[in-house]
Length: 241
Image (cartoon, one colour):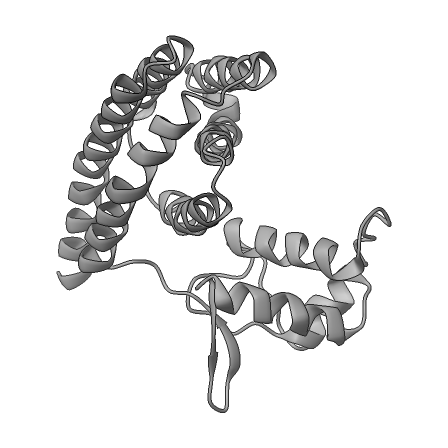
């Protein structure tokens, strides 16, 4: 059951760590609420309720929402305030993947020439964690699935960061946030294929082979769309029945 931020709901505060600027911590917390769908796609964001929940004033929540609006994860609507971005439709998903195909192979190409041993080890550990999370476990099914897609996000962000291009990395991170939100809504059997494709990307990066890294990433993105596209089509068909 998803928690909703109703006007009259009372919850204990969630203290935030005092290690960075407050607005950064609030941003991370609100982003987590969106990614976990505590605030559901298309739902209004109740600023006062979020502020109470995080035990902060409304001001840093508004600042965080302004930042999230620039990333396309919330939108400001007349008379409603901020609302969470809705899930992608078929055209939106195709557009997302088209952009990923433009950006992520190039990031992998560039990362192959900048990768150091520490990042290579972190990427390898991410693949291991994904493989572990994809193992059958009926009691921890959703928790493992969440771990899996978190590691998937981490893997792609690491590669983007190694491209040594802040603009390229920022664009990819924004796209991946939408991807992450989308995949939380569609559970289907894709884990083994995804891990195998990540292993191919990692192997190309280890060889410091720019062309192979770009091609492995492109293949992974094309295959990912082939896995997710039909799931969206089936959901649309079921909704129309």
